[in-house]
Length: 173
Image (cartoon, rainbow, N blue to C red; front, side, top):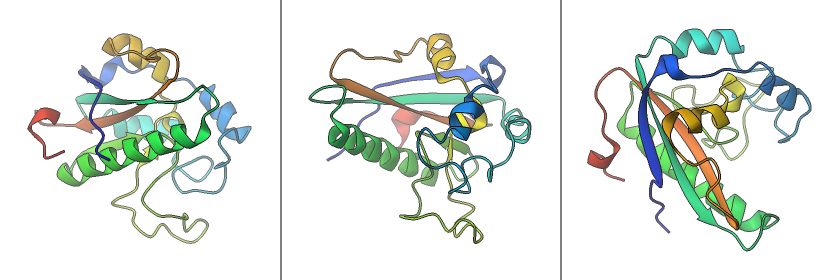
């Protein structure tokens, strides 16, 4: 099944809002990946280190995918949507080798992260937006993109940081 971009926007990187509070969710192991992945805390770069890397890029493109669910507890549909979103994020990253890409949840490149052994594919890894301390709720407001697309849906976000003019519509997606 092919997934399409639901909404997207281009913003200056300076428009991002960061929150160190997001690290508390990571430390509480809300998603189950704390200290289990190179792209999640505490193994990933600190928020400050990630900010430094992020701010070396002038602009960003944020995009979402929207997926229908039976209800808000339909884990299978939510997980299927995340996988489809992630496959699209990977496809975009492959076409933009010089871009810095952040996605929804833990890194999708390996079935099981090599952590604590060295990362098997450091050039391909995709870090979590939240692990960078980026407040997705504020990002959606600034970008004019819906954070919630209504009942029985789930929306996933990814961010592409780039230096040159990039148009997602011109890509082979």
